[in-house]
Length: 419
Ligand SMILES: Nc1nc2c(ncn2[C@@H]2O[C@H](COP(=O)(O)OP(=O)(O)OP(=O)(O)O)[C@@H](O)[C@H]2O)c(=O)[nH]1
Ligand SMILES: [Mg+2]
Image 1 (tube, helix red, strand yellow):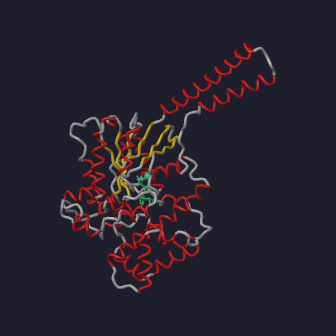
Image 2 (cartoon, rainbow, N blue to C red):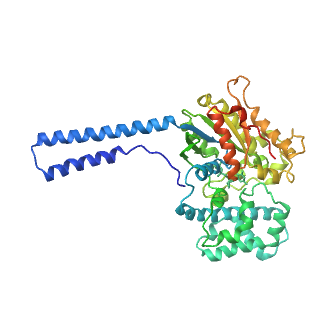
Image 3 (tube, protein in one colour):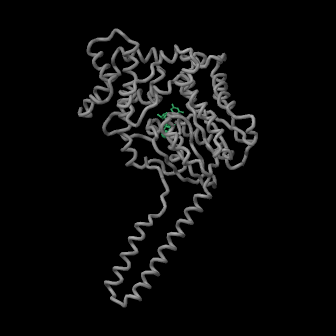
């Protein structure tokens, strides 16, 4: 995904060049071997000095950069924030990248339809035989689509949305818990998105769901500060890699999705080939999560509880003790949409509020109270964010940087509430 990763100069290839210099010098001007050796040693020394200088320069560049780490559970919005930084403070996406995102976009659309098909199968009984067959196929996964021409495939996709059962389901469950969050953005503009000539726009790319599996970083300048922003994969299997980034961290931006309060951890935890992966591990069904009264079970499967727990673990991590912690309570747009239809009290039994603001404050408290009483040195800051909204991210990132760089602490607007 075109992340800028700084790699040190390649010593092997440079040494390779040294051999060439020696060989070509000898072939053009044959000379006594002792003179040739002296020249070769001098050339080698010059190359070595130049490598050392560039390594020193790079080390200096890195050391003057503030290292900011994006942490948080899967699907929280970390990579979306990194993409926003590329749009805001770098050159955005190249045309080539824009093109390459088209296939991801189609995958994401399949993923949405797969989830809808699973929901229809479970909740809607009376459908015609034709519809039943198609819904069964989409619920099955993507494999039967392989080999079908793009045009026919697009027709299948567009027809699917017209099915009465699908429309009824979407009306009854517009915020079905395992429906991917980007469904609200992609579904209304499906005709346009699936057209073969369509080149994904920056907004389309911001809504893509591509789980991060490794560690990526970008370097950029912001308000006279040099920043090194690092993004990691939030799925549990990838968290063991995080430790490699914990050295010299100026700040942790911990991203948590507020909209995850009714989502099951296992159900939404997907791999880079989401549909195929789900064939092997079917999602935890919505009814299972809702009906659960066992707190231990809820803890195990609720995505937001997992995020709260993870936040506590990061706060206690000894390598991050001197890092600032800024909590991004993300996906405020989806949270506001789903709250009236999926009450918070059904998932967090101690919640007894009624408004959007009370619900978001309650969830914020769940995070903030994870800070140990002995941790008196650090102040926790939090923001409500919508990572797909470029203006909002620009604002909160600036506020976060003010905190990180110890400036304008009193005017950051931290703890801003959801509107
Ligand atoms: N509507 C909405 N969608 C969001 C928001 N933030 C992120 N998303 C979407 O949520 C999905 C997941 O976002 P990512 O940025 O890939 O999540 P991540 O934290 O990097 O996930 P991992 O790489 O698995 O750790 C994408 O489809 C994003 O477009 C938000 O504030 N609002
Ligand atoms: Mg990511």
